[in-house]
Length: 75
Ligand SMILES: [Zn+2]
Image (cartoon, rainbow, N blue to C red):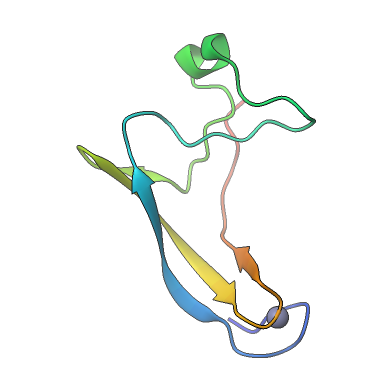
């Protein structure tokens, strides 16, 4: 993928981490709450969960220090 900010080639890779709970996003200044988590609200659909980890296919631009991935946020 070409970086939309600087026009250089981005590095394709896999973002990963501990997968014990869903990876979530909530607009505004507060993080996803426990009740939202229970209902699956704010879940990033790009995150694929294994037994102990999650992974997201992402592109990284080392020049702009930005990362891009496609996802939907569950409402
Ligand atoms: Zn860039």
